[in-house]
Image (cartoon, rainbow, N blue to C red; front, top):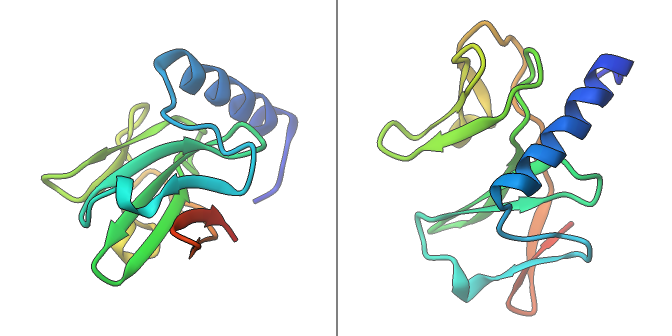
Length: 127
């Protein structure tokens, strides 16, 4: 993703918005959450060290995460568990987190950026 002045401003605004609505974790260190604190099938919102909001998923087979800034125009996406989709609040672009963040409906054309995570010593950590 090319970082332009506009996208940098959007990321900064998204970080501020996330902190105002109460991001549930600050991943200032590599540790995000204890694995036992998130149930299988659950999600967990956290903030990347650069301030970008992200969402962690736990499945039977492991954990994965995405940055939740829409690739279309930088809006914030929200997870709708009944549909199992991340949906942007600006133009309703939707993404499938179980298919590598692929675009389901536009106007976005690029998938959501993945966040590399792993499980180490009982913690979900940035990898």
